[in-house]
Amino acid sequence: MADYDAVIIGTGQAGPALARRLVAAGRQVAIIERKFFGGTCINTGCTPTKTLIASGYAAHLTRRAAEFGVTLSGTPSVDMKAVKARKDAVTVASRAAVERSLKGLQGCTVYEAHAMFIGPKQIKIGDEVLRADKIFINVGGRAVIPSIPGLDQVPYLTNSSMMNVDFLPAHLIVLGGSYVGLEFAQLYRRFGSDVTVIEPAPRLISREDEDISRAIADILQAEDIDIRVNSKAVGVKKQGAGIAVTIESAGTRSQVAGSHLLLAVGRRPNTDDLGLEHAGVVTDARGYIEVDDQLRTSVPGIWALGDCNGRGAFTHTSYNDFEIVAANLLDNDQRRVTDRITAYALYIDPPLGRAGMTEAEVRKSGRPALIATMPMENVSRAYEKSETKGFMKILVDRETKEILGASLLGLSGDEVIHCILDTMYAKAPSTVLQRAMHIHPTVSEFVPTMLDDLVPLQ
Image 1 (tube, helix red, strand yellow):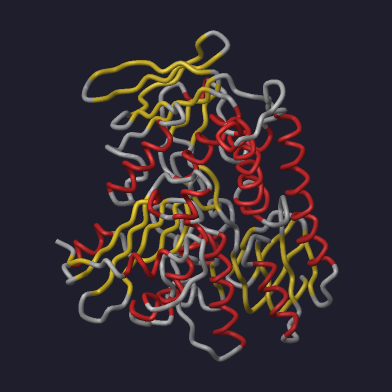
Image 2: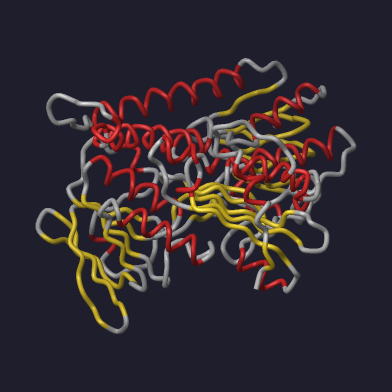
């Protein structure tokens, strides 16, 4: 049995950073990784998908070159093997950097194996047992495989296996009209695939406001993406060399035929094979590890960070989990999960940047509020770049003047959202941002202008 001060299971966004902090504090640390260093973000999530999206944007812009007075000779084409090679190079370099930093970290022992609890302070890896008073679980999640008749008889793709695609699907069928599904849908349409998105809910990304959902649908349909909402997949089968999906909508059944099928209907935590029951760690009905406001599990001395705790499904929430745990353990700084403000982005083009409450959530709360919106076609920077799709929306508490939330769907929305988010963290009134002088010409300069036009939320 090998004794350590701390054992970390998983090398996603929280694990390596925590290992470095613990070692710097004089702790002897073991970190365990059973597959790829860097977790979902580096290997099958943010890093590779945003690299692919950059290639898709280049293809899209090339087709629009004439709009900008640029003439190209010949017909532009997409070399999917080259696209994948570029994505792989970025991913491999990022993965190698994480592995190299951990293996070179004095005071940290790296184990490449599958970890399983055999007690609240003991973890078995192969024939060896590690013991520690503090154990941190950072095992991430994976795609949900839905129960659809016939699905087990056909080939399908997930966000992970999409990373191996080096060809152009003739017709990609995407099950799931939310964040992962929509990013891949637009991406492969821009590469040249026909794309159909099948979503059982009445609208795309139903957690967003209805006007945001409508605008996103308009953006995707303008690129000839076939969107089927109110459509439940009730069967899948092979059809020649391709796949046919039977959908049910308003009691009527029909088929969508395509060459490839992508499942993007949700995520599940990688907690089912950790032996958590041997440690007494409690999970919820979906398998997420239950944690308190400081990410402690039901067992003293065990914490859960990242996607596996159900308290956030993003790289930035995972890293923030590390910051919360490190602050409480090492800095005597009582940070909490509930201190953070909801923030994320949808990386279609143009992107959606989100912070705080949606308009629907503000209405449901019943609090008096102010609202302002601005179409992107009124933003000079967007007009100059011929990127005028989308709109911006911000909500403010009528009494305190604190910003309640914002949705920025448009050029640089994923970046501009941070000036609003930082104002929210400062708990400053919206007038501080309203009176700020921003640089021209930018998208950000129109945030103060938008705040000039606040009206009561009816």
